[in-house]
Length: 247
Image (cartoon, rainbow, N blue to C red):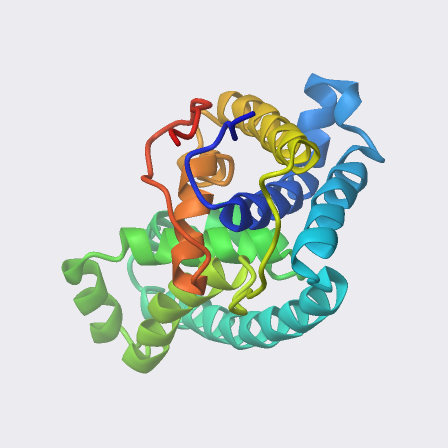
């Protein structure tokens, strides 16, 4: 029996845990579309992944998750403070130009994401940071600085967009040897992959008009991010289609 995915098993498993996290973030939308996504769907899916990790790699995913959560909270707190200050500086710096501050806040993602990001929503904080980075062209940056926005905070926010995005994927180098060639293990891996792809297929349709959210469910992109943690990689595409690993 062959594996259905064209990447390392470990990268697939870690990306699947990320898919479960993203499903929880957007659970209401998923459940409204299909009630089968309600609890305990995501926790049952995590249990499948964690069982394979523990049996085949000896990885204590609960301890790793605890450490990762602490690191993300620390990074997120610093980014939140910078975002709050920059928002205030934009509002005050453009106060004399009618409507200008709101236009800038809209462009940089504050209008769409700040409300939830300021209430400890990690996904919305990351989405705001990505929107800020992606929409901050050189001309707008110069205009911000000219009107009182601290350039050091701007640089930190741009860096935080990358670090928090990567931080949402387990950063520790995951090591271990495993016997992954048994039929039972391959069946478990393929089952996990199929379930992850089910979530991603629905997620991409639900958020087809919201690129930031859609990207949360492009499995190949999540797998590619694992390369930063030494867990293997896969080619990124705009969407996902199941594939069969050639051996």
